[in-house]
Length: 352
Image 1 (tube, rainbow, N blue to C red):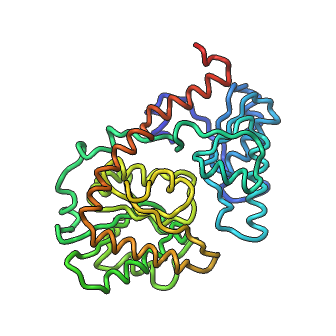
Image 2 (tube, one colour):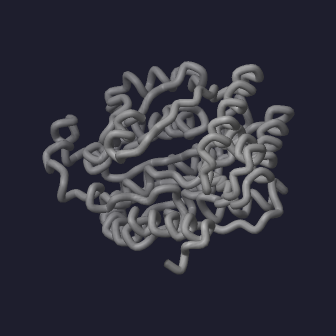
Image 3 (cartoon, rainbow, N blue to C red):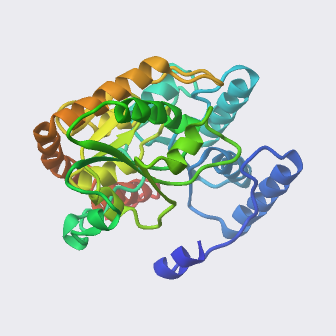
């Protein structure tokens, strides 16, 4: 955060918050936010992320902040069950109630907020969706070294899939590991490889030997978390992103800007970025309950990855389509302009 503060030239105030529920610490954070808002008297409060938004919007309501924006970037209750799901949905309902403007990150999130009776407020999506857009001049092959793929140890005889993100169950990593095992067992002219960019989480382990496979298989190149993912994306032939739930993910947008077609699940955000057979393929949405993996989605993922390997010209065609589709919809300056227009509208300056 300090790096961002210096780069953007803004003032930053630290107010401690816990990501998980901690009643005493949450109360302290709520009180600190309340007094901070009373002191600063902001015209606009802009929140996102579930826990931080809940506390800030409650404090903003009590402190009398006139314009309170809740940017809904994802719905954490999706994929949960029972009492925990009820608690998470209740948190979302309270956040939406406290906000004067509820802005879903995409049309899928908008539909879900109404369908699940989280709020009955009028909702709108800014531009084509996404929280920040993408700098397409930065995410461009013109900025990158051409020999990075070979430096990673891949050859022209390899078909390289890439995954970027948290290596956890909810990102479909068990299904991806099982699909890779099937593909590896088959003989073909192209060797299938997986480039894995991200980090494992101890609190969200994979099933069976899948973590060991993803860390140690000779067909998987695990490079850990990377601050700059561009050269890794550009080194791959396709992105595979079998996530269980998203708001409006950045990784498929970043891949598309680098001419990389994507395999995604039919979930919020992903099915707005990817148009089936144009800039990638959409497979069935996962239906995995806690403690189980989705065998039907796993098979769909395997079949689609196999199709990618066997149809290289179609993969190249979808890659050629990808960048134009991203630049026309998710250019960062266009997204920023829409957010600025919202701010100006709220404070009555939109005509100036």
